[in-house]
Image (cartoon, rainbow over all chains, first blue to last red; front, top):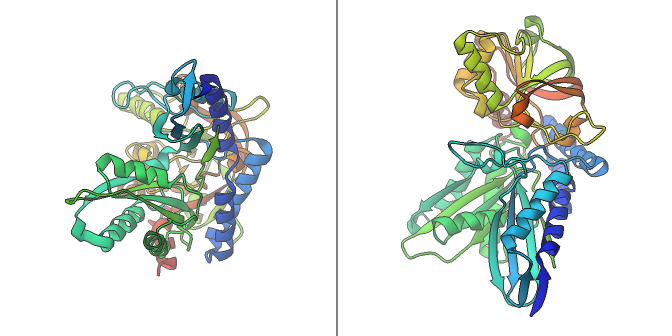
Length: 281
Length: 183
């Protein structure tokens, strides 16, 4: 049994909150630069140039890439041979978020009560945390600050099994079309298929943690990702919705086995600032 | 096309010279307001009480910046989704506001009010908060400090880049741009 102090988790989390909000990952940065080469619209090119310059300014001057520094979302894979000491995992992560958002001059965007008493918690906690217990004695923490504008443009639909591939494509493409310029295109589209109502939404979220452009390991779903991406870009919505050929940088699908009566589907959208970071402790 | 330099506050003449798709660089003083500040402003209008800022000719920028670090005028400061302000925007235009800057789709009622009151809706590049923060030279809170990032700020901007989405003639770049590149 390996012992791991809660304070170690908090230290990592605090650093990850700051790093993810200031340094855009190479996967997304490369995808933005590639899209500038391919974009046909002059206005679209201008937007992409501004986005690339924005990433460079953020990195060089340590300014958050976007003012919406997000809801803190974590996927944790906890090796079952690891024993956490000095606190719970939830406390450790939230302590790290609080410190990271305060020390990093990041915006605190969480309110206590969603409906009646929308008072800011002032430290961006609580985080949204998903935990899987896995074999081994390592801990993998994946973090994404999730912006509200793109999160608002997300949906779950309980399709019928008979809706088939065409049903999935129509749901995703029509949903993204309706979102239009709101989620700050070029977007990354996370799609969940299968599982229950709740599970499919988590799968769509998990899809956004994948390195941008990395295909689904199953070739059938990798092909479906390509098909949906082309249809989305053929809408002509373009960067920021000003018109152009780059509406989405990537479509990522994550699946789960399905009930015989169901075919759940979910779309979770990320803006171009598709910030995600992982560490293995 | 080269962006046009424009000066805030705006005159009707400048508003009428701009069309959907035009890129502009804004110079001068603009004000910020998001959901909470709009709600307070419209409540004052309902009561017939004076507003904490004079809206005549002004730009309102929908933004909630990150906290400024020591030595910075402002933190990361890109636009937020404009649709949340749709319910309030016609009232703001009635009171003399000439332009609003945000990102994303507007309601038909907002588009109609822009035509009626000779106003503009512009988009700044969403998610370019670091770049846009460099165009803001000074920031101070002028109303509702209790709202934190959502307080009304007075901003001095230099060559702040934006694109006209909805003009005073009823044109809509979001609809027209996509048509041109759809396949």
